[in-house]
Image (cartoon, chains in turn brown, red):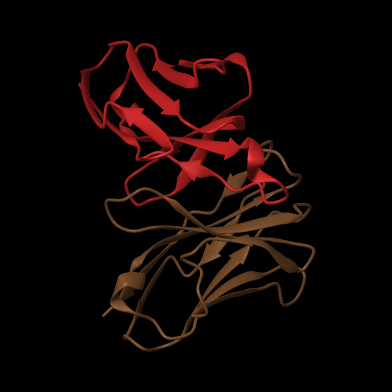
Length: 114
Length: 112
């Protein structure tokens, strides 16, 4: 069964450092998403991406965040200058269409900012 | 107020019991997703519903659009069903983004 692959599974970084979280969506999917889950809290939407541009972003997704699809297969989330409160599990997801059919999540990257 | 509410927040059951987890939402939706999250964090899709009822193995999901309510049932529960079960909705106003709005999850522990 096709999978959304995320790397690394766990990243520890110093406050103020830049991090890039990587995702390989399912190959025929067209819509891509990042979500985050702070420990003990619910999953929150960060950003959606289609046709090489952001289609929607939440208020969490400020200027410190950016997304990119650099080579047609990878989908990355960059945090420019990490803060302690960025510590969370980050999930990538993809879907083939604008519906929930085939909406698939990756296994997540646990980011710890120290 | 959360747009998606789940109950109960925590549930402990004995193996073999019938389990119901409830989800209520306050927004108009185009579809609802039941998801499972195991310790370690990965999220797995169980059901996508826009109306009626779906069954997969021992899992049954129902939705009542008029009442803005969905339930996830597990029959003959087993310790391997222990996980967090999450309800997530796609708002009807989701437009061209298909983002999901998540509930807080129900932590289920099934004891042998």
